[in-house]
Image (cartoon, rainbow over all chains, first blue to last red; front, top):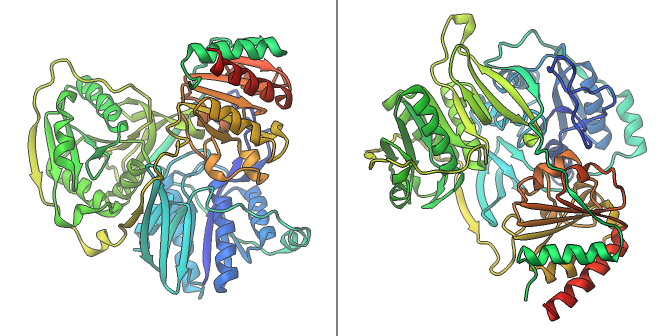
Length: 256
Length: 333
């Protein structure tokens, strides 16, 4: 089973977001970067599926040259092939991102690499557009389901489940298909040291892209207004605990 | 007119749809146009009855034998057909999981831009929105465009409304909406991906998403065993256990307990965050809590700026003390 996993390079946010003075970007001078969380689990899922069923895992990203770092992280986890659709760092909207990915998949198919399964994350942690996987599936005329936290494949039959109202909804699809997964579907493995060494030397296929024709264009970024009010420090000793119990009692949450 | 796509599951309305309709009604008033709503599939009739007070002028009901069970592409086809029938200038849906999924299919089917989780809309030249990034920790002003290269104006922007951007509110002078039933044309391809079975929620179990009290633990708890005292505190408060992403990554708790942008979003009366630093993605998960209590030995932890109350101390001392004090309070109220 040959699987393509599409990932995105995002900043690893900590306790605070700071913007550049022009309000156009997050200030990432001191930030590290990572594969967006849902997608890291997609890479892991692809590895588990090919370990069980055979086949290869190809990982793809659309981004600037440094996004190769995230591809190497996925290679270090065990992915076999990597492709970088290289931009100049400008943002590509979901429609344009999907178009470029579809073009790359079509080029791969013509070169003899057809993908039985294409995995996406449910939404990127930063832009949160919720649509690239569905747009790609539609263009490729493949069935697609999103939000998946459990996947079973038997031959060409896929059973996919996701959370709904405290229980689960179960979908059935046939390959070739597109699936968007959510973190929690698995716990991703740490790359091994030999994995990292192999990844350092692995070739990455680079496809340079032109400028996007975005229909959804960022004008600027801004921080949400802060709530303003300062909290109350109850203290640090046993009297602080007693004070907290009083507060909880007044909110009616201490069960009888 | 403005068309609002209502999210309901076989007759159970998602309350976020009421917020979306409130948002849509205000936008419609601003543009001096009517608000229409679309309901799809089995269970639509009883839901329609509950929407009478929301200022909808026409309710479109898409009915079809094969709309008995949710199928995202088929739902989207109903939206696209409703758009063809009624020529809306804007289509809205709630920023719920189904709202995002259906609207993404609509975007693909109609080749229109979709802006997710909008908090504000400014129709004009260009059509602009404010929308959420990073789960709401950052806002983006964005413009939606038609095919600029072909000189084509934007025919109809697609938007999902961020949860809790506005509270749901009925219109004071709302009239009974007209009803328009239509039978969409659905292909086998539209119906291919559908819910084939369900697992119902466990009875009696407090779900993290619905719990009135959540007691969360972070790296400061120190170990998986350290969560035992958290469970005792949660039990005394009739609450559920939550955890940070660090704890899930360490394997101390299952992902189902994770509170955060890629975990569960909670909205309890009280959230007690123990040994949790308060990373941005974690705060996305708990920002709807009425009251946040932080217990942490670091007075400068990011969570301190977001907590209503704080105890500065090591959770390994504070939690057993809290458990004992709660146990005393129960027996001596």
